[in-house]
Image (cartoon, rainbow, N blue to C red; front, side, top):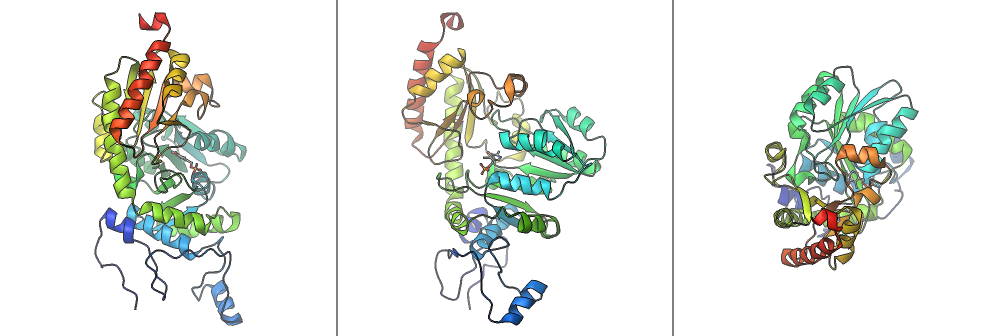
Length: 407
Ligand SMILES: *Cc1c(COP(=O)(O)O)cnc(C)c1O
């Protein structure tokens, strides 16, 4: 008989290594990769019983797959959620969580500072189907209160937000949302389940891009939706089963391998991010550093109530506008210019000309994104090498700053 896990709560590191595995009778050490689209039945009766729901058997990998299920079980244990469904991308997870639940005539309230494609779903896609959508500034509790003073179906928020690392008060917003009859969906990508567990503050659904820290090594795309067993089975599963955002078992397997080191990678990245934030804070070429645990962060206390560390991303504003900022980016020798994050390689993004180009200048101004804003995702390199790379590139930015800005 296969061993089962001890019948008591296990700690995150143990769950990341051990949780969710369903060993076959062959006794493999690592999770088995079931790279198969379908499954066969012993006989016609077993097929009938499976479709009736009276027998448990995998049918088709669009509905479920043993490798994908191992990933779902591990993520549910880690999050403290009753159920999980994995998807092909983070956006498929956000889309399925929202569209499976919403219908024409519903109302959605969302924080303004959302990942670009999440913003597009709320601002552009949902209204097409007759769903009313309202944006609020995530840190403005009075704004949430106002927006949630009428019946609402769903709230979508991200905390810390991308890219300015603004914090939403999870407990307060969940309470307001529930009074308005809304289900709260939290995009927890920036925090990861190791730093913040939204369900403990009242959230109903948590979504992830597994592309980021879960894989964490830049290989595959993936996503996940977590919630109650009832909602996942009755609302989400029929939508996923019939619309097909299924993740490849191969990608699920890669993410399972990535998760085994999440508890080593994320704290190491956070420790380096803290060092980098403090270093940048003291540099004359930097106008402002945004990092949740810095004393200068306006919501530091709230961040520390909800999160156990500041996260793996540091955002900062380079003095001297776009030219000086591009000079800084181009002078980096170690850190790559990219639009991804949560990777073992440190990556840097200029939101105004890439991820947030399409939202327009007015919306960027409202979000606090300037032409000097830089989003830095800290990887696993030696932090001293990162600091030296940043220092040399800031020297280059200082030389590129127009004279007026330097005076
Ligand atoms: C990357 C990301 C997504 C989308 O995930 P994909 O895997 O790229 O589809 C959604 N939300 C946040 C906060 C992200 O960083």
